[in-house]
Image 1 (cartoon, rainbow, N blue to C red):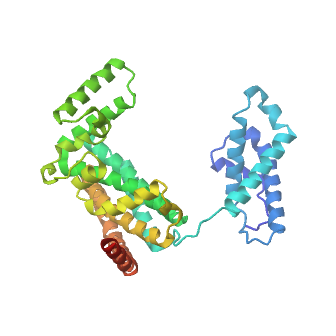
Image 2 (cartoon, one colour; image 1 turned 180 degrees about the horizontal axis):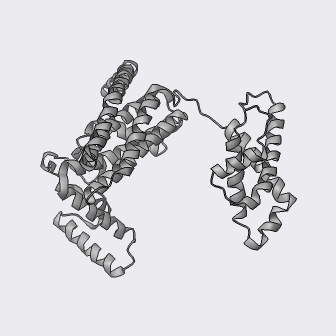
Image 3 (cartoon, rainbow, N blue to C red; image 1 turned 135 degrees about the horizontal axis):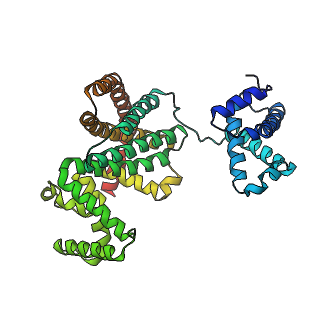
Amino acid sequence: MMQNKKLTREEFIKAIESLNFKFKEDYDFLYEVYEFVCDAIFQVIKNTDLPFTPINHYIVILYILNEYTYSLSFIPLNKREETKKSDDFFNILSSICADKYLTNEKLNYKSKSFINRFNVPISTLDLYLNFVLRSLEGIKTIGHSDKLVKDMLLKGFSMAKCILSLLISGFETEAFSTWRTLHENECILLCLMQNGDEMFKEYYKHIKYALAYRGQFKSKEETDKIFIEIKSEMKAHDLKSKDMKKFIEYGYLYVAKNLDKLPNFKLNFRDGVEAIAGLSNYSKVYEMASEIAHSSPVLLYSNKSYFFEITILNLYESFFRLETVFEAIYHANVNDVMYNQYLQLKKLYMSQLNSIYTNFKRNYLLRYSNKEQEQNNEKTTS
């Protein structure tokens, strides 16, 4: 559609009805606003050398409908008709919508990005994430354990999509710090999966403890009863009062099967959850992500290229582990037809995802392994 051509009234009404906006009595007013907004946008396009793309009328309409609905929500019902007849209301509404469209859509700030959503490493993983997220939402789990696994997978894969969006937008350090949370989620999930029903029961119990600690129970008697239980368990593990918070957060780990093989076990993430999950090899990269998350100088003066690559690599590795858990729960909760459809998709795209990861890993090692070795040698000799 040409930049200087507006929708007809009929086209406009068809568009807003497709968006489920049903207040027909407002159509005339809104169309006038739309015409004013379009004219303002066309005028800016005409008088600027910036490379504007053709106007997207649906986005203009969405700004108008949302701004209109939001503005009226603050006005008493008995004064809304009077407000709609006000020139001030019309002019302010129209100006705001024109400004938002031009600024948010045409002059939107974009950080320098190393990749876009059409690049294969992004588009293939995004396709797979969309499939597993939709599939998970359709699963009807039986039992608390499967429900918890499903919820944790939904959160994990959702964070993976969030990381992709941040990378596309050029926010590498923000993506890396989000991976940190994803890693925590996957480590807890792997601990639960590896240790079975006993740990699931303990985990649910410690959720209850956390709710009591945060004062989420209405009954003081119930809260007091839970704290008596917490203190009794802490005493059994020879813990002091100062250890209550970390016991509530990590105490479920005491039932882990491999606890006797962890001489440095502690009630924390690094020496507890991560170690029991068998992912201690990520402790250094997790520490780096924590520095980013806590706004250290690394956040401000970072190598964008380096954090882009390290985020992609760790995202893919987390995805591969979570996908294995997804397959198990999906197989257990769907029929053979649906599972075979999933296997066909996996056969088609998993090989490509593995190839993408392998290439990224090789290039990353070629670029950074020697530098990291030199830094380690300097630390050793200093």
